[in-house]
Image 1 (tube, helix red, strand yellow):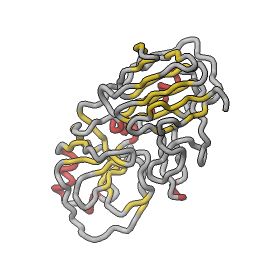
Image 2 (spheres, rainbow, N blue to C red):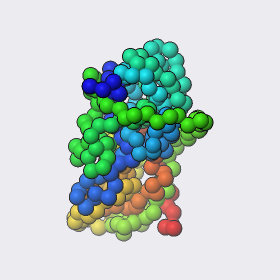
Image 3 (cartoon, rainbow, N blue to C red):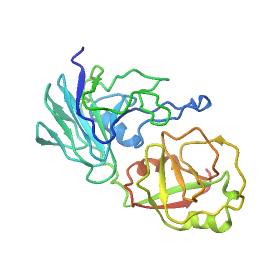
Image 4 (tube, one colour):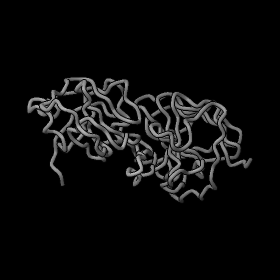
Length: 289
């Protein structure tokens, strides 16, 4: 096997390969997938000289540990966390030189949920429908990392002459999601729609890459019948029978049978990827552009 590879010493709670996803396949029942915090993944790639579409690793809460077979440059962004090379502290959100055989440790998130690990050359697992992303809902793409896995890497590009350490937004203390009401807000009572856009919810510990689940006031339906399954989009806020809104994220299903009270604007979704359980969530109704 080529020495352009990394050995997974510790996979962590949930570490997956992600790139910019596979949009455009909803008609086949294939979710978009891709990095939940796209700006953080893009920054990590830029810091190591990768192209924007290169695949990175997305960790969840407690990081991972990797041992490259050849000398590489890495960058860790997203949720702030300790980074070390052979036990020596290294920079977060900056390029880090990792010699062949050294142990790169990405620690537990100090705040936020998901960190992104870019390696020079990018992770080059076999693409499926044009993407290397792991999709937890459909099972497409590589499986989540396990201890002992070996990930192939591409050829590194020369680092840019100036490598930035661009500041990143801190994980949200309060998550404000701008939402366009509809298409099924008329399925709810006027009081429920008012509660949705004025009262506070909390991020549930049951949240995952499929959706950000909330706890808080239950939204009461005006119409009690069944809704035929219809198409779902990224950011759709579906309300299941318990009345608690669910914001669909990258691995969301392409169809669903519960009413969608509104759709969150896509630029607000990266912050949702970093909101820890218990974070206050507020939905702000806005007009379409």
